[in-house]
Image 1 (cartoon, one colour):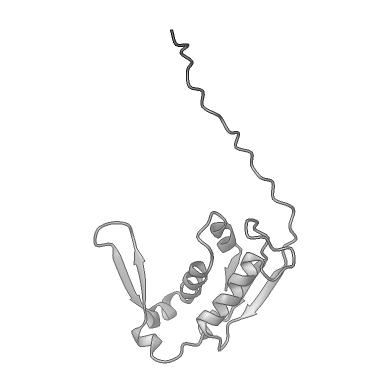
Image 2 (cartoon, helix red, strand yellow):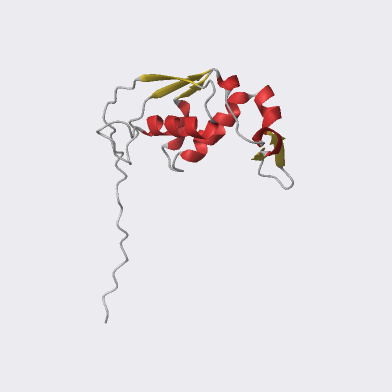
Length: 136
């Protein structure tokens, strides 16, 4: 007769990787007469920590970024009239469209926050990186 042995599943222990202590510097950026995309790439680079020699993609070693004079962002061409900011609530028919000109009047920080968020990698680290972005 055959020896019947139960199948044993391997249990892998989930060991939480300890992140090294990081000294985070405060970078202050002026948004006066800067285009949204160029300013957003600078911010994303600093938030990820790519400006540091000890950069590693799986670690969150970026710095804190504070942006001021956000109302004075520069938009080239006809972007103020034509570009549309789109949000989706998750429900059917839940798409909300807002022109950039209207959003610049009501909440100019949301334009830059949306641009920077899309420039960061969609990993678990993105939320913590976005918490270090301060828009005044």
